[in-house]
Image (cartoon, rainbow, N blue to C red; front, side):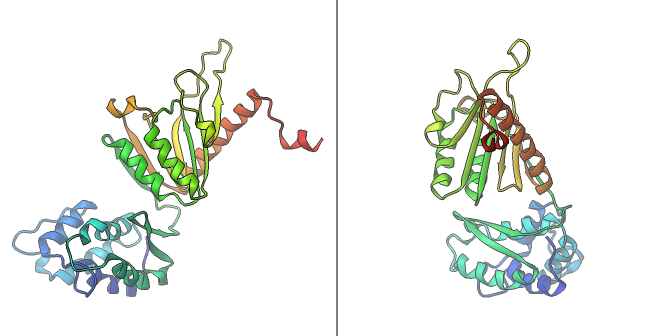
Length: 277
């Protein structure tokens, strides 16, 4: 995320709470928040360099500019939980923030109570988050942010909580496509609600199964790893990586389309040329 120098200067009082619409942040609290995005400064009776709160925040903002850290910082400060039990209205705060960052073609938007920065970053701007715990909740939170498409390719899908999250998005009009294995484990009749493709085992001996585990959201975010969307997976030792990268999303989308082609070939689904003939 890259902002102009003028925008960064206007951002300082918004971040540290020296304005009329965001909570005040003390020196230790400012250090705590910056630590969350990788700034390893320590508060020891004062801010580093004996800077004032405003001077210190301005210094760090300019260091973070044109990195994903700036995006993360804004999203942390505008976490709705930081406005609980305060006199401040987060909607008013967001409106005033957007007056600043809209000049740089960014916007903080509300996705079911979770505020996320939207806007075009450079191709090099890639965010990676790795999770070993609370994986189901991480997936659900990302599903909630989806605005247009959700494509899921997982070997096994038996988790009704995740299916319900997809159903809520389907009712909003999103394009939902699911690819799973055609076997006895996948007992939920996802076809009743979603476009669902079941892939049969392939290979000479019919023992090569579709073993992918990934989800593509809005062609810009990918969730992938060892986690199947099953009830049992919640209790296993699993890992997922969440990539905010259009390039990676396009690569996974290409793999998804290859799986669609396998499904169509297995089910003798006519292609466009055959329909035209």
